[in-house]
Length: 333
Image (tube, rainbow, N blue to C red; front, side, top):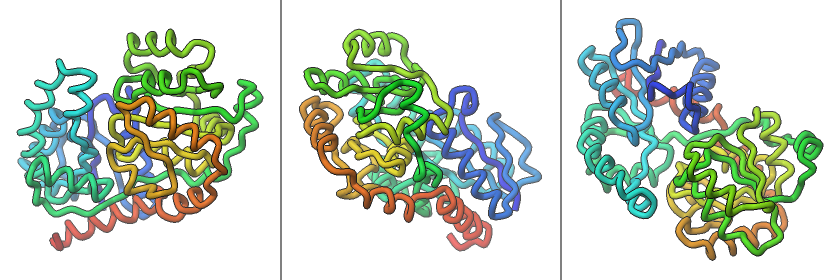
């Protein structure tokens, strides 16, 4: 089987969660004997491929064109939407972008109709698609995964480099959607050291975080996986009070490395983590503060590590994706 994966043109230049998801899914599929190429252009020749797998309808313009190209070449289309409704987030942080969001809804609906099968990352994501678009395209749930190596993470490298342990960690691009500024404000007046690891997506927002965080906060722009794993192991709590995530790959990594987790009550996190984590509201600093304090002073949730390892690995993601490919090619949807 030969498959072409397609996504936003800057997928590899500006890496994010979808970059990891695509590369890890590709590797897992290759382990199952699938030949997988990645092409980030709009209208590649698909003659050599049995199907095209497209990702992400939030930034829908390129995905729409890629799916349309596949349909014109009569190539079956698998679509991983990576979708959540951004209305609340934009209303509260960037109301000037609401027009862009609404203008894209028709194209998002059309892309969902053109695809032959959808692979949402949670049932709650599929429910959102049905609510927003009355979507009835066949689907199969494919949960996101995590590298099992995070299970054996050691804090040694991070402690040697930064001299810190038992702190509150947040991994993610520095941006309003990830909501670092509200987290900083929520933990002011506590003695908890905060460490933020991630590239700067919004320089103005970063400067505001830097100003308000002061000495309580350490920013680290990027760490390779082995050092990131060490950061997780050195931390006491990982918090991600974002406006939405599906469910946030860093939550899976941090939980597997041994952190107690504070996660947003928006998005799909509850479907992944159940009652093994603490939930907070991204627009309520008091909610974030209370959740972090409870998580910080609670014993480590040992069940969380084993639960993630049993249910959410890239190997399982690859198997579920491969199964969806086979069903589509055998006309069983």
